[in-house]
Structures are given as structure tokens and as C-alpha cells.
Image (cartoon, rainbow over all chains, first blue to last red; front, side):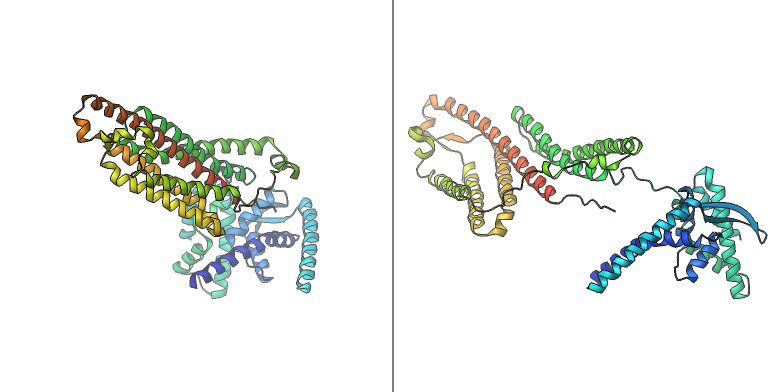
Length: 116
Length: 334
């Protein structure tokens, strides 16, 4: 019984992470319509209820930048060098498409759940 | 912040040279920011323990660095189903080829326990080599596919029309009934042979005055009968039970394996299958006849053993192949 509960919990955790993965990217892109650096972005996401650990967020920012969705620059702020990220024009375009897809999925899910 | 410096140094060790300073500088500024926030919240500097806890939460240096690297895999998800399918198909084939080669050497050379054991224990090495070379080929294929094939659908071009026709569902056919009858008659024949030797020898049964089966048959004869009778019972039950029908191939192949083992044991135990009776010993001419018969039987049993071992592995491979076909690799489509 304990083992099956453990498996169910592990399964849920895997599915939850899978569900979150795509959503996190949309959230990060949306937050970066305003320029931020890693730590403040993480705080902003957490304030909006989307807690994401550093080990995931900072490499994600680099990956999105490599993909051309973000642009970044080093700048000094409060006597410390920080790397600021913001959405690139391509990122803006992709974000709009992703939001449309998100709304479509959300609408479909809502209808499916209503039917059920 | 000595701990932070040590932490960043450890992370840098696992990062690619051209990006390591940049990534480490960004990590430093973010972590320092976090420390300042925490200190402002507590109204005092962080203790060593608190600093340590914060870094520990940030993650193991190797893991943190790995997340900055592009995802690496030897065989990607596009090629992987082909790789897995080939691997699963190749291993039974390798087993079959190995058995054929080994069996052929058994005909030409004497059977010894050492050779039988060596044959059994050498296969894992062959399987490992096979898997190794298949993996190498697919790594190259994956590399070539990623570099030169832009459309991954090319690998999966297919048409429903080209799929094989639906296989007949396994059921009780006339063939199965005849098989059971034939097996039953075969066992009856085998049981009748000791008391009615002409069933085996025909008119030559007169020779039994001078020759008789060697004592080794007292054990092996009944072992053969027991195995064949169990196989027959399985066939009978299979006629009436669908669940038994599903495991029948496996039980059948097990019985064949046991018969093959018996033949091998027989060959290992003796090369004297016929001996002279008291009457035969008195006649000089039967001395050489017995030697010739034993030599002939040894050769015949070796061939039988090879055929049985071969048949066993062919049937085993067929069953494994069928099982694998019914459990294809799941290819996720996103």
C-alpha cells in the first residue's frame, strides 16, 4: 500500500513537472516584457505564485537567449554588475503565438471539464 | 563569502571554458543579491551555517553546471525506436547464429562437459559485442541524421497499405487435434518398444538374442518417456484451455530443451548404447558389429542433439521475436 502510494506520488510529481515545464517558459517570456535580471525575475515569478528554483531558471534564461527569444546585457546597478534580460522582437512574436495556443488549450480543457 | 568563492570555483570546473567566467559572474551577482535580501530580512549578516544552507539549496556544483550545457545524448529520440527494435531483434539472431556455429563444431569434435559449459558461458560476451557494434552504428546514424536529414518524418515515411495483413487469431484448429493424436500414438509406440522390439527393429529383432540395449537406457528411456508424456499432456490441456494455449509454445520449447539436454547428457555419459548378450559374446562376428552399431548410433545421436539444440533455439527465438513484436517501443509524439 505504502509502495503504491509512493509510486502515485512520484507519478504525480513527474506529471506536474511536465505540465509546469511549458508554462514556465511562457511565464518567463511574459515577465521579461519588462527588463529584469535573474534574481529579480525569480522573485517576481514567486510573488505571482510561480516558484522556480535557481538551478532551473538561470540556465533557462541562457537557453532562451541562445534561441533568440531573449536579449541580455551586463550593466552596473547598485555598485554591482548584473546581467539584464528582456524579450527580443522574435521572443515577443513567439510569446503572442504561445499565448494564443495557451488560450486555445485552456478553452478546450474548460469545455472538456464542463462536459465531464 | 569564502564559501561562495569555493562554490563558484567548483561550478566553473564543470562548465565549458568559453562560457565559464560569464556564467559564474552571473551566478555570483544573483547569489549575492539573495544573500543581501536575506540579511535585510534578518537584520544581521548570515552565519556560516546559513550561507552553507543557501548554497546547498542552490544545488550540487556539477548539477548546476550540467543545466547550462546543451542536452546531450548518444542516440536521439528520432533514431532511438529503430535502435531499440534492431537491438531486440539482433540478440535472438546472434543467439541463433552462435548456436548453429557451436553445434557444427559439436559434430566434428568429441562432446565434453568443458565444451558444453564454455558454449553456454561464451554467449553473454557475444551478445555484448553485438550490442556494442549496433550501438556504435546507431550513434553514427543519429549523428548523420541530425546533420543531413532536416525532416525527421523522412525516417518514418509509411503507408497503412504497406502494413502486414492481420494475423489469424490463435485457436484450436484441426492441425492441433491431429498433433495431439500423433503425439499420443508416438508415446504409445515408445512405451511398446521394450516389449515389442520389432516395432523399432522390424525383422532385425532376431538379433536381440545376441545384442541388447546397454544399461544406460534404463534411466534415459524413462526420462525421455516422462518428458514426451508431459509435453503430450500440455497439448491436450491446450485443446481445452485458451490460457494454456498462450503458454503452450513456451512449455513446448522447454520440453524440447529438456530432450536436447537429455541427448547431450547421454552423449556425455557413454558411447556404448548396445552391448552383447551372453550368446553374442560367444560369436566372434558380433564383436565388430556391436562396435559399428555403437559408432553409428553415436553419430546419429550427435546429429539428433544438434538438430534438437538448433530447433530449441529457433523456437525460442521465434517466441522471443513474437513477444517483442507485441511489445513495440512506445514513440511519444508531441
